[in-house]
Image (cartoon, rainbow, N blue to C red; front, side):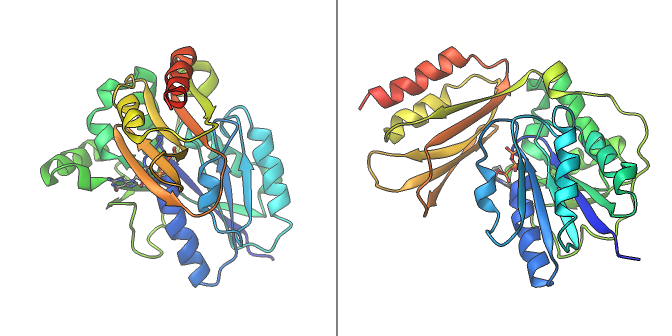
Length: 306
Ligand SMILES: Nc1nc2c(ncn2[C@@H]2O[C@H](COP(=O)(O)OP(=O)(O)OP(=O)(O)O)[C@@H](O)[C@H]2O)c(=O)[nH]1
């Protein structure tokens, strides 16, 4: 009988490091000569992370909804398409708002029973946002716990942002939530090769359903810049953002340079990476109860201050 395709689910809240991990996994799998495909799910209508996947890796992108609720059917048809290829593994990067068990349910659908198997659910935890989790709504705090509870492997990531003792006490807290998973402390999601494979699956019991549209109030907003902006003014705008914005990613062009920059912001930490290719200047903002009017005004101001 044909070997089943291994399916790995990458879970974790917005900005926890899923794409950072995925890039390393793709490289490792390529070196091992394995054929893999990637499914990326984005809450909004545009994807920033898909540029991070090399062109020779089959990539299916599911936009504008969370796999676990609004586009579960699309996930099934994506599996059907991918299964026409000769693959060893499929990696699914869920949105930060996804509940892993809903994705896992689709993998266990009878339609695919002899074709795919869940290899492991890997959850990344951003220790810095976990430490400050009381700033999140109760629903988001609940989601963070659910993402941890159903993981076979937990990467306690961004350990560079806290002291050793803070990380140890977080590890202790996490073990109270899921005592069966394997744990790895990481920075930039660096893990030993193959450490995500061959894990025992945790027993998945009841879960609290937390769907993006129904309870979380997580929304995305995409702003498209038409021209370059001033870096200092942009940074000032970022500093004054309200607490309900958890994640920003997108492409920006600044007045002092002709290059385009990938801007990454997760929970207070901004990062700029020079881009080589020409891309539309889309900025994606993700948060709860977004005040779109105010955000648009602020961003318009940055463009008009030229
Ligand atoms: N300081 C620090 N930054 C990290 C670490 N891991 C990832 N980052 C940064 O955190 C930001 C978010 O990382 P991503 O890998 O894009 O996170 P993600 O989970 O894919 O984000 P979403 O797709 O929005 O849910 C990026 O700027 C990363 O470079 C870490 O260990 N330490």
